Amino acid sequence: MDKKITLKEPKESPLCPKCGAAMTRRTARKGPMTGYDFWGCKRYPRCKGTRPLYEKSQVSSKEALPEF
Ligand SMILES: [Zn+2]
Image (cartoon, protein in one colour):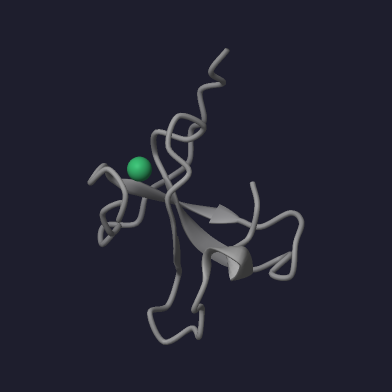
């Protein structure tokens, strides 16, 4: 059951590293990055690709990425 998520997308949204779809800006609600924004794949939950909002972020492993 897919919930339709309507979020405003910034112009420069990146592409999902997993499936190449556009990404939407989201806010982590749990995990180590609670309260921080990040990019989540538009196809979530079918695709769980994420990217840090800022490429500078030191995110070296999947485990460090926020959960939805
Ligand atoms: Zn994806």
